[in-house]
Length: 114
Length: 110
Image (cartoon, rainbow over all chains, first blue to last red; front, top):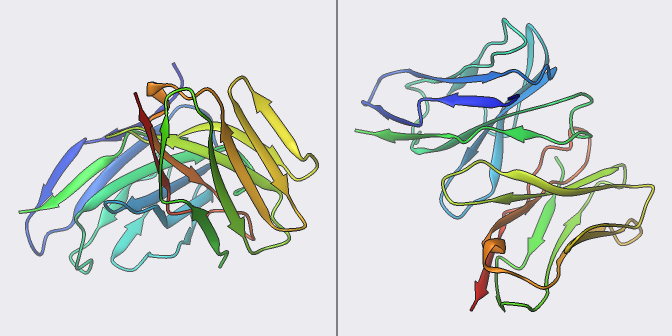
């Protein structure tokens, strides 16, 4: 089955630690995205990538970093600079052009601070 | 960036009745208008989308209508069923087309 896989499903972080969330897709999509969702809120864009080795900041990129070394993978690092990291993180992928194609989502990673 | 407003934030309807959710966008260059459904603890799933060259699209009990002049598009669900209970999101257009509405929690009353 083609799809998009996020891991882990739940993640706990201590204050001052960086953590990396995994996102893998086997849909052969060029574009990948990271969103943050807070309770009762919509999805806010953190970063997106349209092609390997290239990515753009979204609306709330501060305190986050990404890499796109392979087409299938788009990991997100939540750094210690992100002061309020507790949230539900969603990864998605789509064909290009960005914003003009359906997005396929993973089932998310819930990050909590210990 | 693109401004996307979605209303209402909560909608409660009797099972079997219809539900309508509306999104308004600001960028007249927008040309792709999808709707997503999110169930608890899951990622959103595309349920229907429309492009700017048509005014309406239907898929069984679900339809989307687009008014480009007024810059709004709406999701219509007829003959609502318990499994329609979820949060629904629209996605706005614009240069990157990646601004979601804040969501509508649809509650189906038995």
